[in-house]
Image (cartoon, rainbow, N blue to C red; front, side):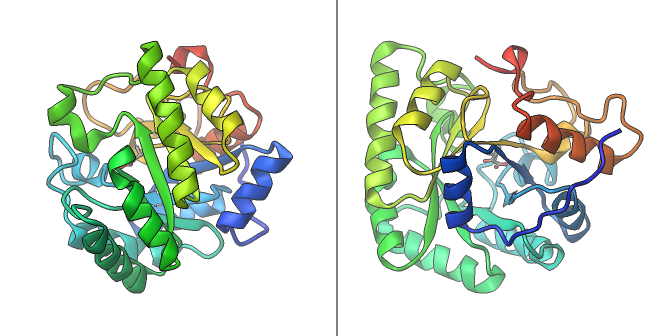
Length: 271
Ligand code: KIV
């Protein structure tokens, strides 16, 4: 049985950087409302993301594209009410980042309304100037590389990114550029484990992985996936943590435990 290990410290970007330096893994999870936010934090999850995955798991869309700034704000306010020590990170939805100024205005609005600590931006190298601007105005950011679900219509599907040598080299260069621009965290989604490990070792900032193998600094998954609530086909990189557990609390505690011990993800959840 996996028992919850509540957080002892308030989680900040500095705290995550310290965990990276100490080689300690951290656990992140999505949440979209007060009750689950409270439960997730009580189980020791360091970073809670109000992801635009809410478009799929809460609203029932096929993609994350319809999610609005108002949707993120609403769910983030409910999640904020459930958090005390965990870091709150918010996705910037599709269409909210079309210029550095628009991103700054939208991120400022979200942070004022929710007291979140970090905003997460898809877009890779197209967001370098934006990240520079956010950083200059005191906004902490998490850049997102690899599979970027907001680009699904250009990518033609949800596929592993960075498999070819040139694409892997380009991703490493972009990761370094994003760090130099002032990104505080990098998230890698659906990239080969070897490439994710190389990027993690190259960067000073913490790297969070989803489908990026076990040699990154932190892991993130979608709450509904780990509780086996998501309808339809489950992503290879996720895992049903409810299996064999008698409660949601035990399932989330098991996830945290396996991430911290480096037991999740194993090869069957990696590329
Ligand atoms: O929207 C989301 O939940 C995300 C995670 C899957 C990383 O971006």
